[in-house]
Length: 52
Image (cartoon, rainbow, N blue to C red; front, side, top):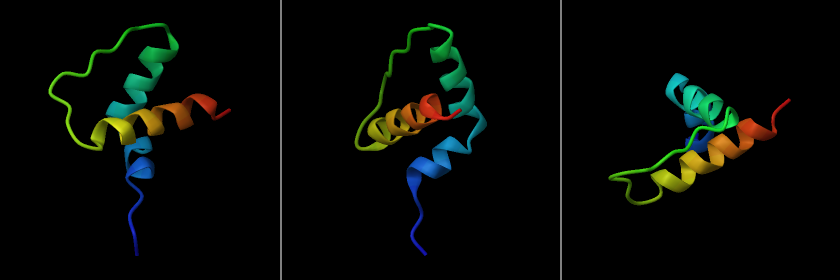
């Protein structure tokens, strides 16, 4: 069964804390990020922001 990395990140408490901080207007700088992980994290946070 394939694993969806975006869904895994959405279930992570660190991702939830980051999404909450962003919703309060905090700024984020990604240092040392490489590959597709940054895009997956951005996708997870964007989906969380759209959720009711």
